[in-house]
Length: 419
Image (cartoon, rainbow, N blue to C red):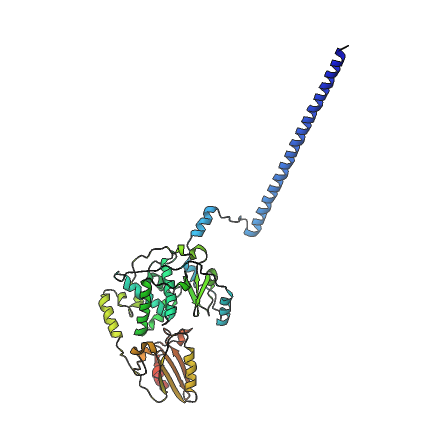
């Protein structure tokens, strides 16, 4: 009798154990099914996204997947030097008119110069390359900025910034005359546009050399910071949008490279210590004449230039000889000429730079050192206004006194003698 309950209990226990096993199997099956469904859904999403990306790449790039920079590639791109020739390509768009160019330039905000400052640059005067470097820098500051100390300082700083930058030659003459052998593409316009045919007065050349010497002794001009490019505000070069605009000196806008290549840490290139001979400077610089003792010939040249000699101008009725102050665009001189000559049949105003009076003045009217000329003759219809563009910042070479138009200085109403 007692065994019956035991058997019943045993059977009941076995049934309960069977039910538990069924529940475990069912649960495992449910879990497995859920995992399979989740995996299938995930793979479906991934594959669908991949297909869409490939389809999109084919639509946008013609089947070439978009390029993605790896960390190494990003680093390499950040360290790659900018190409200076890309900013002087002759394939630039046609020039804009002045007012439109000024409007475009004004619309671009100035970038802060930050804490970076140009470091002093020094070349010892006893170094063999010093005089050639001096005259290359002097030619740049004079022909680019005229006889204006502030403008010359800004140009000198840009030149020396380039000497230290990996993107440019590492000598003064190399920077100034880079690309000068080409009709277009020179880095500084005066080296390839014929401006060097205009010989400056001895006084202007002397002051330019003083500016250059000061910068080769360590002077800096912080207002332009780490600038390596500039242009006048009446033009709008296509490359200006690729650089940071950081300063304006007079009518010139100054720019530096964007990003790391515009920071002081990038200006780490070493000066090579050698300067090339520049044939274009032979008429101004004995140091650039091969086979001649620089020291002796330079002294001789400066002695000769210091003498106020040359063909002089004989005054006649209607001539006005004056002293003028160089700098700016000289527009006021033209207005003064109009006022002075109003109502006169023949009138000529000839001006010499006040700061170079020892080389030409109303008392010693030397023709080759004339700084300003206004001629008006109602009988022949002649009206001519010309400036010495080493002293005045004129927009076109046609307004500059040159060997081709210097004849108007001696004009006295006879067109046959002025032709």
